[in-house]
Each structure stands twice: as structure tokens, then as C-alpha cells.
Length: 177
Image (tube, rainbow, N blue to C red):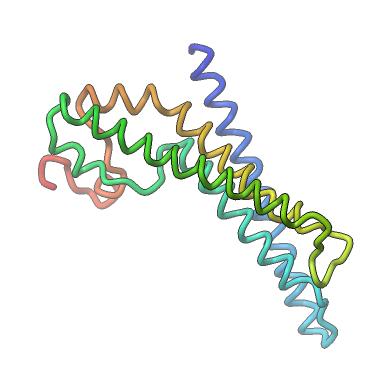
């Protein structure tokens, strides 16, 4: 295994750990919130914290999906083209995706800077800069994941094409699609 592949594998494992911790934390917050409401003494903070947790799960989960090549795409459509056309189409798609996340990271950084001194409404000890840091961090992780997958994308575009996991799961062979 070369060093890029080893780094990619470690990067994916790190993202998996982050996502699992996020899921567990979100489940705990929601369970605590439910139990406190059931007991008739709801915590004021759990709705706000759960919303932040869901946003974090979304961004870190998206980076994990990118690392695994499981984000939204149209592999069957791209596969209809010859390998000579498939490669430029795939590279343009990657460039657009990475460009979007560069813009999101930049914008997210601006948001974090603007929120200096602001806190959560229900937990005034928690900075909004912390809660919104997921925008630039998640975007940067998504960009890294895309760049680490680029050699695989190029190989698939030059070769037999991309695997359409949705069709595969439905039991449909690519030739039938």
C-alpha cells in the first residue's frame, strides 16, 4: 500500500470515529432532552445543542461520504461516455465540487469571524464560533477527501467506468441500465 492510500485509509477511519462520536453524542442529547421533558422539567439547552449536533453530523458525515466516494453523483450517466470524454467530465465535476467547498470554507471562515463574542442563547458559556466552526472545518475535510480520491476517480474514468452503488444495491447490472 502506497503512502497516499495509507493516508486515505487513516483519514477515512478518523472521519468514521468523528461521525460515530457525533451520532452517540446527538443520541445522548436527544435522550436526555426527551427524559427531562417526560419528567416535566425540560432542559432549556437541549433543542439548541441538538440542532448544532445535527449540523456537525451533516458536515462531518458529508466528508466521510466523500472519502468513500459515496456522495451524490451520476456514475451511470458519465459511464455512457467513452473513456476519452469520461476523464474530462469527471475532472470538471471534481473541480466544481472542490471549488464549491473552497467557497464554502471561505464563507464559513467569514461567518466564524463575524460571530466573535456571540454565544448560544441557552448556554451562554458556549461560543457560536465553536458551533459554527464546522463550516470551514467540514469543508476542508471534504476537500481533502476529494483530493485523496482523485487518483481513484482518474483510474475509473480511464478504465471501465464508475461503479453505480445504487444500481448495484438494486441488483441491476450496469449493462441493463
